[in-house]
Image (cartoon, one colour):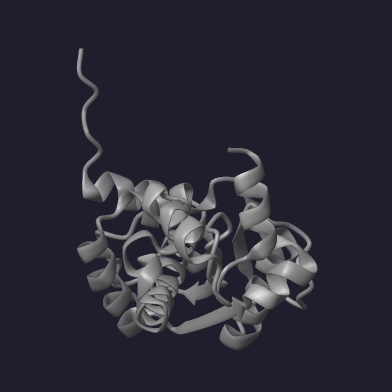
Length: 210
């Protein structure tokens, strides 16, 4: 028997379950998520988004479940609707120096400090070095409206950065794979070697597994 597909209204009710008690108390919360932990190239980008209780954007969802064109539209809608949006970036150099987990946490810290929320829901990470109360939510982009909105802002922002890198280094196809380890990306690396946008430690690890 086929499973009934969740309606947009049902998804919004589910996604806002954690936010609603806070909104009803007259308070606000920022959602925090990042994009770009796994690629072989490019920065890691985090977003902190403070969404109002109304209007709710019916298409907001985990960025991984949203088509690219819809993500682009939602990015604009979120930025117009949000009460605050912060974006934090950790560079390739910081990823190489700190490791990807700590670089992602640094990007989250920067995003939170830019948005200046009074409270945050964070996708998976806990005990970030910030002054505001925080709650870590596992798979937060799939269960929290605020984190889902942040996941879209982080993803689209990073995709745009990778498109800019594609203009600088067209031989790698960054605009298509966004730095992830696709077959075409590995082929380009074998043919051309890495460029300054590549994470050298990631590349060494990836090729040692092949």
